[in-house]
Image (cartoon, rainbow, N blue to C red; front, side, top):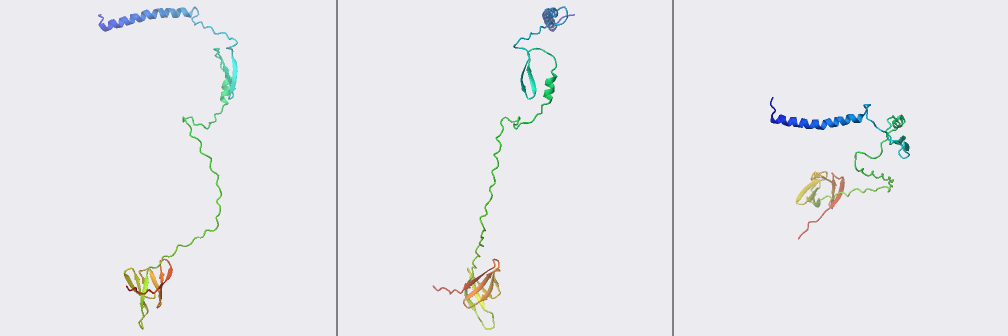
Length: 195
């Protein structure tokens, strides 16, 4: 069987490990002694490191021990079972807690200022102008009304511009009712201006 270059490296590594492992094994057997168990010396308690109870915190007696005492302390376990966790006001999942909201302001009663008088809006003026009439025997009296450039001839009871009803026609005025606003207005006869 030939040993190649790779196998020579493995053999050298194994030999070095054996050289290191043999003295370590011998040393570990000597430290066990005759009984087969390690010899451990426990520190002797002094006045400073003796077991002494410390302040009680939330019903659990805390004990500062510097000895290696493996006994189970059932009194500490029983006291810890009686602790009830009551959540605090701080949120442990936030680094900075926002300030609490301000308390609500007291509600002041509203004083009654007294009766409120609501005046109705003024009714719009009727834009018609009365500038003449016709009075023929056997016919009802006709009024000539003008709005802008439009001229209307109407008798009592007619509706002009689908909004203004002619209530009464006299020689000096016409009584017109605004049907949409329920407003009556007397329009006086205006004489044509001569220039």
